[in-house]
Image (cartoon, rainbow, N blue to C red; front, side):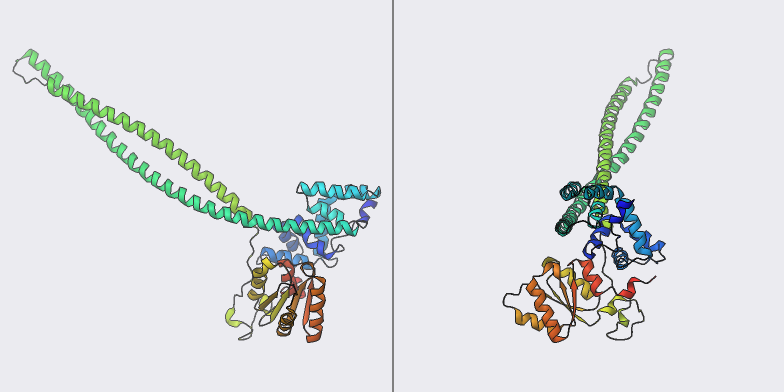
Length: 406
């Protein structure tokens, strides 16, 4: 167990690795379970709020961070032993090869924790792991949008097949009704034929015994037998059609079941990953127009404040704006490329209340320039290690007090 002392606890590792490790190893249900066991009321929280509150407790040793740490170390024990053995032999190349092997097989979370938490891991390997995990998150986002497009196509296909199935079902019901009517007619004709045969036998007997003047019904019987034969052929044809339609109905039902199952599988991919931004339930009591009784409302953090973001991921600009505006603030944006827009950057800083600057998606010159402008105009500056939505939400909306609310 001495080898395990070389591994840092989750609250001791670098900040930029805490969120990737926890996100890769803890499911949404596990987030809820840990918070609930530590006395949190999680019934009204959304999935992203579970993650936000859990991450807020990772700064030091506490009940939530200890339970999280125990779970992560238990899941990573096998890989921690492998890493410890490699570092004991001072085989840094072996550690890198182990990471490459496991990441290629999709085993990310426990191996990442085992490497980044070991005290002997060098900075270069940490940078490579952070970059690879960051790019994997982009790939996963592209896959999510691709699956959404497939889901839309599946919905359209399902609707078309449902309409076809409804038409087939109606046709089958009509044919079944027709077959029932034909069956009734067949039964009636069979009974009528039996009655006529019986009557014919009686008349023939009477004719043979009494008088030859009794009307000869042989011709009528032959006509009726011919009609019965035709009707039986029609009935057999209808029976064959009914069996074919039953086969078609069975096939259509199987196709529908397969489509529904495929639709459910595609939908489940997004069921756990779709989070709604907070919407105030008491807009008539907004702090802009009156006193808001809800002290825990996240909109109170940004209400009527101007947020200026420089840098970040340009394609996610609309998502950044949605976070700020749904929290009651105004959003302004600069892509971080200075070029000849220094005057425009200064104007945006003067006009805002808070400046957000993710260092992971900004040039060094842009960070220095915005820091100088914030000092000149006495503006609040928030430097973020990540340009992720959760990092922006954590910095702007989730307060320190909100993280500790039970």
